[in-house]
Length: 145
Length: 145
DNA sequence: CACGAATAGTTCGTATACGAATAATCAATA
DNA sequence: TATTGATTATTCGTATACGAACTATTCGTG
Image 1 (spheres, each protein chain N blue to C red):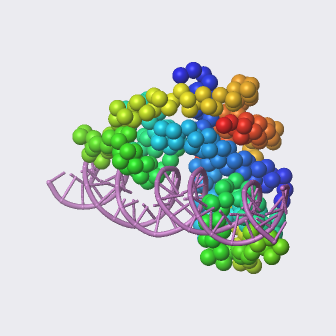
Image 2: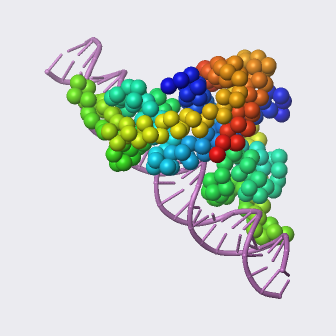
Image 3: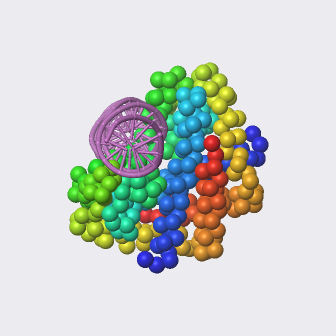
């Protein structure tokens, strides 16, 4: 194994660790409102763009369409969003948050991001660089295969 | 929404994107050998430490015990690893790769990491810094709640 | 030795997460 | 306008992924 492989392996494992930790933190907070991390992000996306199509929501969540389809169904079942055929293009669906969904989001919103503020002990420069490098990395990965 | 929240939101989404992309790349490669990303990492861990207990493997995979338990069962079903009670401590299990598991790993190994070498267009300094910042971030996250 | 606490795995219910296949609708053009 | 191709969403089968609750075993201490 050469240095390249070691670093890439470390990177993959680092990403797995970070996702695991963020998932854990979200889980605790979300549970209080009977929400999930993904549902929170979805309600946030719908607050920005209402209504959204399935594809738009999937992109906002960084998930595939098939995954998002099931998530929306469960959110509908919980009364958090509504789903309607778009009348101008019947292939599309319009997804909108319900009053209940908006209210739950508002309640949870501040708490959620506040929980993560310890990150700000890190210098802004470092965080900004992190985001930039990750974006560069993402572009490279998207170019593979 | 203040700057802090925006950056943290971006960070969460960035991590989601990166995991999605790495998953996609692994999927394509792993499929050829009827393996999964997690199975590859598991076989790699078992190549380093053979046998491993469930807990050791879970830590290497960055997964919880309950998740890892199911993964090991599926790998046993596929004849990739074996699972035996440890005779000196019957609570533990010893997980070892089979000849088939070792062989599949050897075949896939080089291809896998080679696929990701476009990452090396990025400077080593940048990558090293990325890993360091991610490690710092992970530590902060682990301290939350 | 007894027994309560700690350790190690498993099972369960639920929610992601994917690609492939399918269905429905719309758009382009012959 | 009829056919073909593109777009949009759903369904299916499988594999993560988790915490909570449970079982089995071992350890520590009176």
